[in-house]
Image (cartoon, rainbow, N blue to C red; front, side):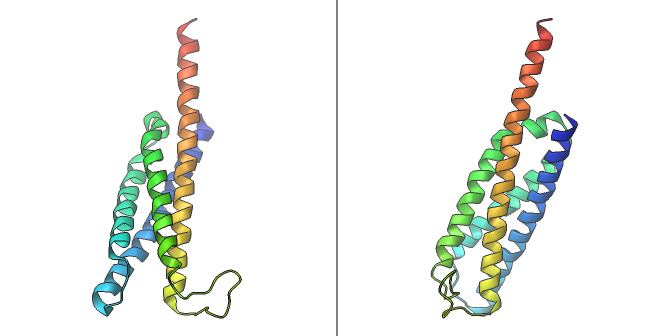
Length: 155
């Protein structure tokens, strides 16, 4: 049980950090859109800002070390799906940029815009993975606790 608590706390801290990075970059995109009149996907950015804000709150509340915070895998599943959707939203928009690709190097630019979008995509994906790992840990912990409670009650 101690190992699952430590792993859960490490995952929650990572979720908080990743969501804070995505929130910071996304709000920078919103600031840039309002001050520089750059065409950016406003609705997509608002979605990611809302998800990252909720994820920050969810990870803070889940850092409280209780059995319920480890085994509350319903919210973990919600945030997993929401973060994968955020990653897909950014990946779909990123294709329209002229930032090059893995094998296409002639269109590559070294402006901050491409790097920020790539960073936002990467941390959205990392956040989805950490929420997914928290979900799996929650399912395992919940079933281990209910199995332990059933066997203790029959003696």
